[in-house]
Image 1 (cartoon, rainbow, N blue to C red):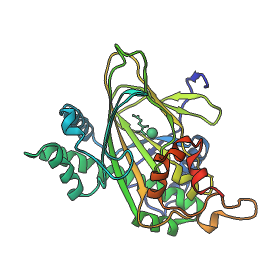
Image 2: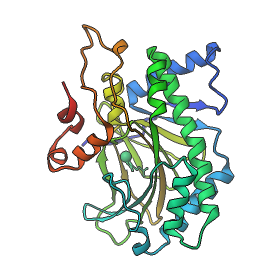
Image 3: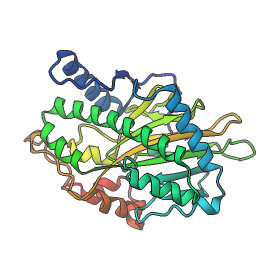
Length: 313
Ligand SMILES: O=C(O)CCC(=O)C(=O)O
Ligand SMILES: [Fe+2]
């Protein structure tokens, strides 16, 4: 395991109204985003879409959710592995997470809220929807930029039509009184893309290609945009998934939010534009949700690189 270095991740400013594909500054920014993802597998987006007020509201809502009794939180179940309630895992005793599936749709968010607060909690639903709507736009800005750099815009539009967002609300207990401070073990996300956001408590670390761990310094306008396993298959290995972990220090609890992209109903297929003699196709077309079930199976859990054992060529 590499040592911890004070390296920095690329920081890229992105704006809500930043998607004018006609401007030359936009094309330059596309290249910058794509290069950051290729080299670091992730970057920090300084994004103007989430106001301080919304930042405070969503973290207030998150705290309120985790303050509910465990027997209420466990009611949030899902057929998809690790999309529902996850907590009290022996190797990650500090970690607790709750997923809201299809988190950009009012119907789905309100169903979740009703499950957690049968007598209602409108402000929770409102904060979640405001947050997911704007942060899913950030995801789309980034993906349009990547698609532009690779000349695969049409393929991206197809994927976008089948994209669904899981909002994961996460709490880490302070490590005080615990004999370990690993909040979440090193892993790559099984998503297409992930956008992480956190309160003021640090802890997230990203592994570079050289095996160094970089600490992420949070601010209310920082969003960590990282590639998941599925993005690697789609880009034919150009963008690899980011390996990351959470190390807890000090005596504060930490809250974080992950907006996770998944592709449903259609197969994820490498665009033919990215395949040639020098770049043979690395992965067969696959169903994202079947891959998630494979990953949760005994065979998938044993695999060092589940995507490759599932659909690698
Ligand atoms: O809490 C964080 O910052 C990271 C969470 C994470 O890596 C995950 O949920 O997959
Ligand atoms: Fe993760």
